[in-house]
Length: 116
Length: 138
Image (tube, rainbow over all chains, first blue to last red; front, side, top):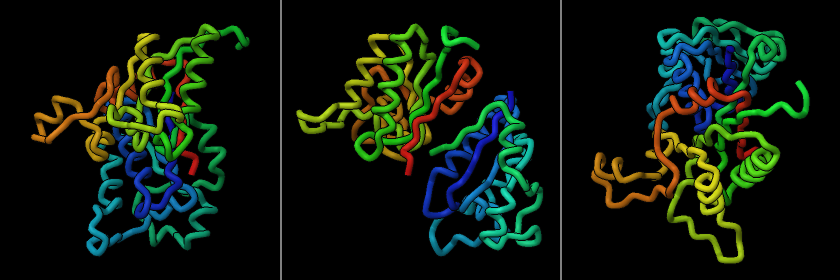
């Protein structure tokens, strides 16, 4: 059984993405296979060099950087959403696989979950 | 799979009562599932869903009281109801032990709900044949 946690909300202005990341880390902590898919406004999580001092929030970039340490198997970004938000590999954090078809990524997992 | 296969469900509620229909939809589903011979392994409240476990919710008397209805359903059917501790503490859903730990002036967790970690959700995904999510839908 493998679970795909989908984050489709922006990193700031919404809290569900952070709770989705906690779900992924929790599965990984219990040795359950898990991957992340960022789509829609959620791809903005993957922007490099986020500076959040001005909004008094923790940077999601730092939280997300723990994913490989926890054992999250893969981080996918929906190609269409990346194009929509002007994200190219150079402007993204390392270790992200661009998925031309999110449907295919979802098909590869037995469970899919959102945090809200 | 046939229509008569008995399922064991974990239900995850992330939408709050009175700002979303998630708790109501989940309750109607749970009642229908149990009535049809299926079982509910546990109910996990996550994110804004933890507000369902407040003992202080006081809707007008001519409106449905979702915390009471859910609490009664869980007790009657001996189903564990778990509120995620991280979600709950952030939103002011507190049981007596967290009240003591953080030296807070009150606690407000409605019985039979308990507060526990995301591990309860992970266990649900492993123990159940189906996991259903009830979101706010916004």
